[in-house]
Image: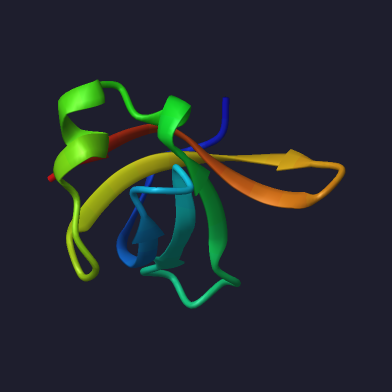
Length: 71
């Protein structure tokens, strides 16, 4: 697993179960899915602008946040 990063929720749709995270290091935004949160509670209550800590995994569709945690 890659090094952990910090960023903030750019947008997240509760209805669709996914969104994007703006990375704090200036790299391109990453996709985040409901299932990638450590805690289901966090995924239910996050809002745009919330701070997150996560790892990034490269996939065929581009970078995705994994092991996501609200900070």
